[in-house]
Image 1: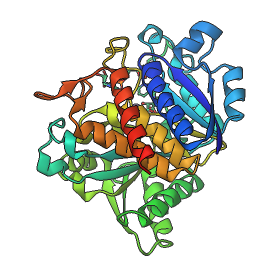
Image 2: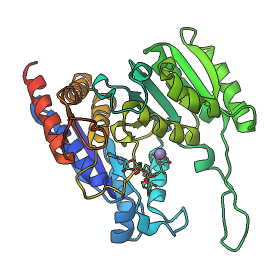
Image 3: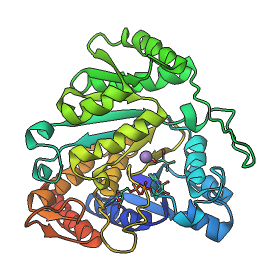
Length: 360
Ligand code: NAD
Ligand code: IPM
Ligand code: MN
């Protein structure tokens, strides 16, 4: 199996966690006799500093030549005063749009070993396994008009969706639900927003093609509450762009840390893989970053871009084993757990992976 992977490490803890994820991919390649190549590219704040723009043309061109893109995180406080179109985050939004992936899969799993890492009661998080399908190319993030000219006391963003945009992401959610527990929860604000009314009507129509899947609708405000109260009730959660951004971070509480959450964006010319968390300037450079979200993101590359399901599972099993053995980065450490650094955690997963693949 040959795979060329664009590595967009970005800012803050982005390079720290991406390093561990690429080590794991290299190990999988070595153990399985695959040919993976890695193409390091600039994006975000580091790209502004070194190339004058958050998404250099060279980065986009090279990424379009790759089979998959792995992104760490972008964002640096020193650019906070810039307008949204000039900030590091603009580079991420531009590359998402250019690659064209519209379905952002964000799994949120409660690991048994981490039940004490979540502030939620163990009986609340037990067996929780939710898959968020977040629409990634529409809504307030990309709707026009959008502006704030600094002299004015008014600013505008536009929440806009077309029916076609809702249909294509809804189909992804229903297809996935049919292979899981057969339930889609569609999240909107249809009691207030026209866009949500279009969303709800369209999802209801798409549901007719999937008789084996149950559809329920939830308003986003009560959904935020249900997610903490009875997360076990949810299987696939389908949402528009901003609601999905917010709810998926909230779901980090179920797992115990935002640093545990991976994601994959499908449907474009090149699939884009990124952990859910950001550049975490508060812990960058301290060795405290949890690399497991990025490592689980690497597993999603193996699954969705390489067709290596067994290897994807092996990486996930290795993560389970390391957690079961009691190793924790500081974000998930509680009580007498053995606290390890970003790099140590990466090495532990590598060891566990080598053992499980050798035994096959
Ligand atoms: P954040 O996700 O960077 O951090 C939120 C909190 O979670 C922080 O306390 C951080 O220390 C902790 N955290 C995050 N990832 C962790 C990990 N792997 N291990 C341990 N702890 C972790 O969100 P923020 O602080 O609101 O944003 C910081 C910057 O990141 C901003 O510039 C923002 O725009 C950017 N951002 C980028 C992405 C992305 O590139 N995909 C995603 C979210 C935020
Ligand atoms: C995420 C991030 C991004 C988003 C930002 C950094 C543009 O928060 O990937 O969740 O809002 O999509
Ligand atoms: Mn986010």
